[in-house]
Image (cartoon, rainbow, N blue to C red; front, side):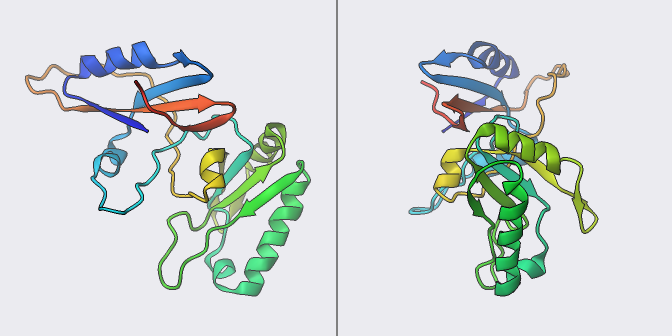
Length: 203
């Protein structure tokens, strides 16, 4: 994982220009600025023994895993029978787009809400099946909320890590007003290898 902090904005721009899209073996780097609302979380130190939260991922980077947000009602997670019916419904619905390998629907642990609660994660047998599902769910809503469909890193799915947040769309850089003390700039380096989107180290 690599989250880079620069004291001067021009240095961050140079890093993006020099690293973004660079091929390192079979790994392609995707480097962009970290959204302001994510800086505190990414730069916060972790407690001893605490597993750090995975960095944000690119929901447009194709994988076999589909992440559906705003796709689950809370009552379906609380009741075991309703939850089992939900899993069956997801398997049936997603099975119309192609082979489904696995389905994960995070549930609360007692009174503690899961960070990814309200989401559904589906791993298909092929990226083409995942693409078809994303297109199908793109214009749907549930309980007045739009269902947001995107890709999710396969390595995190395999590890049952469902707390990675999607990066917002990349925006064109804007000119910054001159300042004697420019604010530090935070970058996220994202590596893409063998169809899996994750965060990779930068040598």
